[in-house]
Length: 119
Image (cartoon, rainbow, N blue to C red):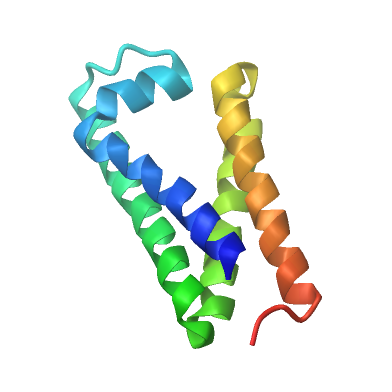
């Protein structure tokens, strides 16, 4: 299923934050990212989001995994969008771009689920 493959690859790309957490912090928040706790959480969150992406890629090739992967992925993506909108990050164009992309992906999953596109 192409939608899972493409969105999974895009989501897994956040894994770059595992090796470049300061860049992720700077891009999303505008902060310098020198605080040790912020770096830790950026790495940790990057790992978790990358794992969601890998799950979506796996589900693209494994039909029985599609429904749970889409539910999980949509929940993560709607959650990220909500968290951005509920915080001062909503004033950052880059954060809004990432949140908007995630919400669009989540809506795609919901549409696929509701139209019977999942085995």
